[in-house]
Length: 203
Image 1 (cartoon, rainbow, N blue to C red):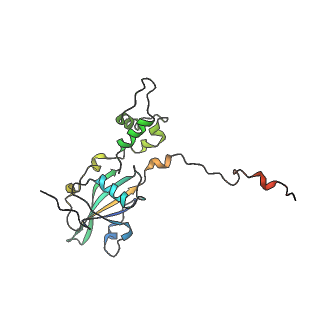
Image 2 (cartoon, one colour; image 1 turned 180 degrees about the vertical axis):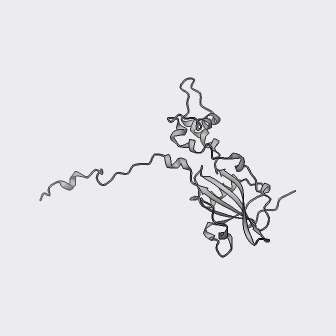
């Protein structure tokens, strides 16, 4: 059966940096519209695709391996309160294997036989204790236990969302970015001063 085209307001998704906001914030008088996105989605869209849509709407939201956690917010008429249910944790907008395969194409040459490591082998290297491996130097070992590709593949159809439901998302910055080498900037003391400044003035 053909699906109808998406229309504005099909899904409302609220996004902020971790942790999740209090449920009281979802009352209309408390909701911050600046953190709210209305996405045009299909029921076949996955949580990873939703994460990518959020990035398309605002590139400052996430880096490729930032961890997204999603929950459904529903109104309970009986208790007159909002309720939350987790629907996916550890979702990255770019698959880890895609990035690890890029690394293997560039750097992971085996000097013994000259072959390039597979993306699976590169991903496995994040779980090894070798501190000199490219994955370890990039801090990817901090992500291996947090990324959940199964959750990333969950579709909106599987969530069986009802009218009025919201999807709440928090974004945890990629922890490996904190380990990336920072480019040093020269201080005033270390800056090279032109010798012209100290040349005597001549008439």
